[in-house]
Image (tube, one colour):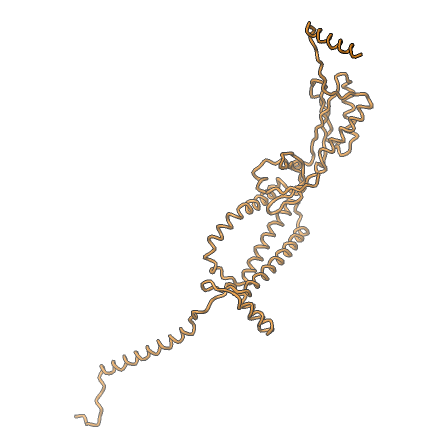
Length: 370
């Protein structure tokens, strides 16, 4: 059989492959054009910048939908600003940061007060345990409030990566003592070595030692109030590394000593009796443990006694109770003619010719003057 001239010749496989390749190339070009347009739609413009506080933009959009007047004010505030790299800082974002910070501070303080009241009502802790729990609750509340503030602001912390190293190092050196005092205060409360209400020895800048009562233990320092209402703020870290005299650590009973001297011609039994009576007649002195009068020795001009007695309230003063004891001893000694001696020296002059001439000369001048 033979093909007629009207019948088209059949297509060869090579022709079919060429047409398929042309179609694939056309489809690829179309895809590239469409992809370029799509990428152009999502690619950021060279002038676009991201606000460091993304929460400020969200708040601006929310407020703008409610009031046109407020929206115009926000737009003006947002117009004042500057851009660092791809980060924009405006007056509006700064205002939002300030408002959130104030809100975080108010929230943290109110939450801390509520937590302190709840701990006082719902727990049976002693003074040191309750204070420790309040400090830990305060730290947790503030940490939670700060995290909420960061979340509300939507701060992009990666934008501050350039400054984080130097800033963190500066804070580390600057707050080293602060964190040391904070940890020292927590440790003091945990081992109960020092707690509010204790009486400790306090030395002023001149080195004079006095007694003070701990009023409170803060984050940085403890507050100690002396009898003259002078308030000392002692860093917590100093109490950890230095020697501290705590007069009421294990017991509030404190022994006070009062030395007394009498003349050698005194009746020592009567003196002892009068010293015991002086202690018994003075308020604040405890009956148990019993007071004690000791003969300490024989001095150059007196027989030395020492009165030892106990009190339960050292925060009320140590010098005043000793003064009351001395005042009563003075009154009793005067009533019973007991002499409190003072130092006396006897001068012995050797008799010789020169001394006799001096005495004669002095005597002669006296006679001429008469």
